[in-house]
Image (cartoon, rainbow, N blue to C red; front, top):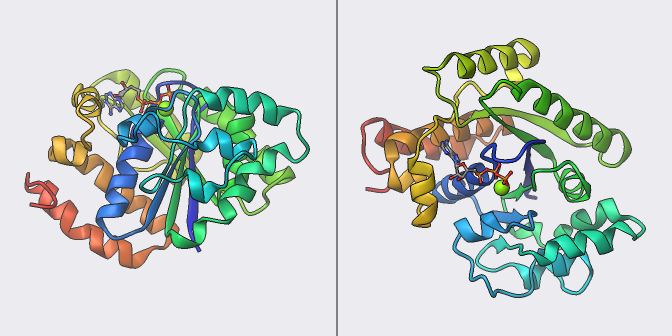
Length: 268
Ligand SMILES: Nc1ncnc2c1ncn2[C@@H]1O[C@H](COP(=O)(O)OP(=O)(O)OP(=O)(O)O)[C@@H](O)[C@H]1O
Ligand SMILES: [Mg+2]
């Protein structure tokens, strides 16, 4: 059975989509069959993963019952487009609206080891659907002054989802993203997250670099585009796999970490 992880944040632009995109890539490299689910009408993940923009059906069709999830998966991506905004509105008036994604994914997840869900930058119905479909919630927090508040609000929604809809939901952790640890505000954000959330803070941070925008433009993974920076994600993946107790996958990740540490492309 697949392990399903929803990646969310209360704020926009915290690096959620880049996290899902890069973890999808890293997991696939170590042999984990990974389904990437785009649950944001912006469709950024679909774009990053190079899905044909005219691919049909999409996740919006699945949520409104117009298509089956199996038919909406294109190269192991369940893509989204602006139609998802309309689907969210339609869904809002339906019974069991929070359970729709969970039910739809149930039919396809058997074929996967990991399912990663990219949430929109809002804690509304789509994010709740992701949390109800997930086993784990992973928070992304941008290394800014208000990182703490954003994490606390997201945690409240996770608790609500757990208490009312998905008792099995667990908090995988929080990743400090787009961080420049040379600056005081990034260090302060890290320290206050550490103080409040202890071990739940993923020790490895994702460094800020313009290379992320460049690699997105070229539809390349940061792991290939800049292996030295990609190492951050390899180390985050390692911590997450430890928390998920996926030991075989962790072992397979080790040589990639060693290669990137030595400045090589992991697959070179
Ligand atoms: N580590 C990083 N350093 C610098 N820029 C980054 C980093 N990670 C992502 N970015 C850039 O920041 C922007 C936002 O990233 P991304 O789309 O991953 O965030 P998001 O949380 O998914 O945003 P949204 O809330 O709009 O969905 C993008 O332009 C991306 O290229
Ligand atoms: Mg996004």
